[in-house]
Length: 185
Image (cartoon, rainbow, N blue to C red):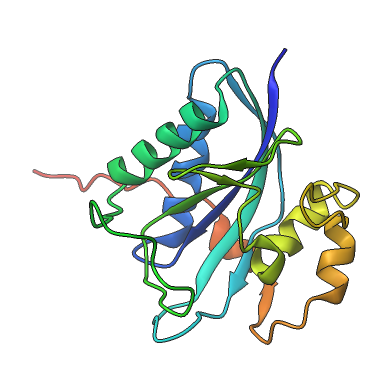
């Protein structure tokens, strides 16, 4: 029986729309994994000293992977796409944010609560982030956070976070037109 998981996706470096599409394509290409639904894409005001607005969304997948195995594959996708993490470093303080080509967060995995050295599910700060809760509310508004015992829609309604999150312009997400070949003589 496949597992149900929700993944948060974010990008603010380079061609954000292309990064976004590539990440979803790579997740969909994982063995025994299927993208079930994708929420709308939001533009998110950066937090802290980070420059450049983010594109954020969430997807729902079905997968045969365990949570740990799925997280390892998400980290591998981040690496392949150019995200650099500092090895051996402790998690970054909440007040310190960095720009990134791609960020893939395992938000929920079935109804499990996982708290290991390498993985925390549900994501430990998702209830503080409008850019996570807004797309999650599209996908699963009645989903109950297994630690907080509140629905996604209730968490979003009670959020006081000041950062702006707006729907991304449709033209921003259209695939880039194919490059035209220049005729040579």
